[in-house]
Structures are given as structure tokens and as C-alpha cells.
Length: 313
Length: 145
Image 1 (cartoon, rainbow over the protein chains, first blue to last red):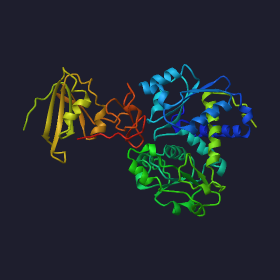
Image 2: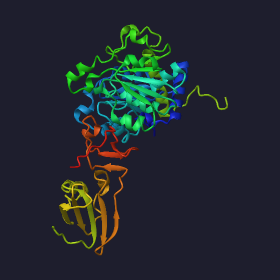
Image 3: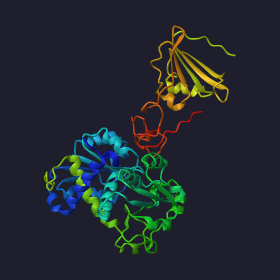
Image 4: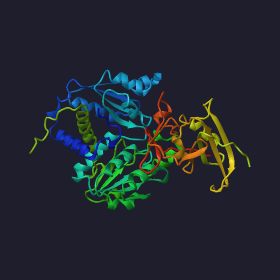
């Protein structure tokens, strides 16, 4: 049985195949509206997350399946002291597949070891968020036509931003990629991303404090929010939350075909007047998120693709 | 010079950083063993050690119960010599194991292993020779002193 816990659980070929499927779904969503009929997705969200949860629910409903889950993190069995291992064993009796978000890092991995159904990591603390990564990859690929040869700027909270960690780990598998890591000193990417992932794969990267100076060289700018819930100390959060704000003036420094991505929600790190810029791709990302989650559910459940290309064609 | 009798059959764990053998006893599983004959020599003279001192642990008899996996990670200079009939028959430096299971705890307060009941503490050797928690990928930090 397959799970998606870490973005590297899928090989590059499997990732590309999943993105191809997501693209076929985007082309003709109606062709897929019955493929998961009678299947049930359990959404196990131990942490508030409106959009990721809605995206998973929309994905399953779009496939003709059903969704069940607890209404909020405060009424879950975890508040009664049940372990993740026990919860997933119980949920395995109710559903065909589960998506788990948890504030503790590694909780979905722990669940997958005890589960009888595929488990999808829907975000574990500041660690990984693989379905956001698939969403990001789909958006980058649809904007640039390729995942190779790109200079990707990552800006903001690179320390606690799990989407950043997942995206870097996945993108290093493509050719000719280089990274520009733009953050305040306190929110630099964790050392293991530098030593194990970037240097381990011999990927060129630069660390900088200046968004303006980085803009002209970027093919992709990935903005992130400084997340209040990741700080133990409110003073640190207040001091750092306005570190980087993307404005129309800064966009004027960028390539005409650069794409701006953001995992959302944003607070103030992208000025509202950037939304009208054709390079703003963050709402397109949201739509793509539903398609990749549909493709992921189909892949993990082994559901046949009604629009699969015929062999030899 | 303090003299401890040579053992006839067993192992000698030598070149332990001076002052750390007491802490090591627990990790090796010696602390909980109530039958093994064990000698601990602290701050013995050493020509090899830059401080001129080292610790030594000698275990008489069967040593298969010792958890030697952790040695290579804790102190790469440590040697383990097997003694048979009073003679050294094998001397080796322990190789780092692929996994450390329930030897040290993950210190990341955000890790699931910090709250989950019955959750094994598992660290795996990464490509760059460091151990990382399998759940949160936090690097293992060991206080060697």
C-alpha cells in the first residue's frame, strides 16, 4: 500500500505521471466525476486549516466520493488522549483513504505505520506539506512549461515554512535548477536542507537578505507568510512578520514571465495591487491544488483513469 | 598507577573519552545488569589521548547483551577488544549502525515522538553520516560529556 508522507515518497517519474493525470483532469473534470464513487476520504485535521481541508474535500467530492471527519481539532479523540496510532487503526475501519494534518512533526508517518488505508500527509507542523508541493509543481509546470532549468526564489519564513522545505527537496531532482533563499537571519532554511539536500545534490544556491536585488534573476518567486503559530515568543513574530512585502514596485524589477506563487493564506506579504499582475499565479495554484489532490486520491486508491492515453498513441 | 586484573574472557572497551564512561554505562545497558562482572577505570593514563587521560570499561564473561551499537556514534575513537583465554583475539572500532532504536530521545518538542505513547525513538544514519529522527528529521544531538 502506498502513502504520501514525504514529497520524495514518489519518484520523479511517479511525480510527473501524477502531474500529467492532474493536467488531464483539469482539461476535462466531468470525465472524472464518478471515478471514486462509493469511496470515502477521512479528513483528520488536528490543526485549523480551512483551505487545505476544503481542497481535499472538494477533490473527493469532484471524484464522486464521500468525505468524513471530525468537525474541529477540539472535538477529536486526541483531546481525550488517544494516540495517532490508535486513531488511524480506528479510522481504517471507516474510510478508504485518509488525509491527516497534525501540529506534531512526523504524525502522519507514525499513522501510516499502523494504517490499513493510504495516508496522505496534509501538513505536519513545520515539517512537510507534500500535497502543497504537488500543487506548486503543477503551477510552475503550467506557467513555465517545464520544471527544468529554473531559478527559484524562496522568500520570507524559510525556517518554519514547510512548503518551502518540501518544494526544495522535490525540485532538486530536476535538471539545471538553482535556488535563491531570501529571508531574515532568524528565519533561514534549516541547516539540514542546506547540507543534506542542496549541497548533498550539488545544487547551486545563494542566501540573501534582499528581495529587490534578487528579483531580476528569478523565474519563480515563491512568497511565504511568517506564521504566528510557529513562534513560541510573540515579540519575535511581531519583529519579523513585516520582513518582506512584495509590491508593484518590486514586481517592476522582475522578468516579464516570472511567476509569483504563494501557498496562501497571505497576511500582508503580497500587496493587493499585485493580484492584477498577470505574473501572480497564487489563485491559479489553489485551483491546481484540487486537481492534484484528485489525481493523488486516484493514484493511491489505484482508480483507473478514464482519459489515460492509449498505448502506442 | 591503579591496577585492575586482566580478564580471561570478555571485552575491553578502551580509549573512551576521560570522564564519560559513567554516562556510557547506561547507554551500553550495563547499569541495569545485575549479574555481569564489570570494571570501570576512570582517568587512566593515555599516550594517545590529547588530554593524556582516558576511561576503560572491562566486562568479564558473556558480553552479547551489551548494546555496542551506540559506541561508534558517541565516540569514534573507542576500540572494542575481545579477550579469549587471557589473550586479545579481535580488536575493532565499532561501525555506526544504520539505526539507533530507543537509545536516545528526540529533543524536538514539535516531534510526534515527544507526545505519542509507546512511540519508539528511532534515528537513522543519513547520507552525510549524521543521525536524524525518522519522524521530524531533527539531527541527533548527543551530550558526549
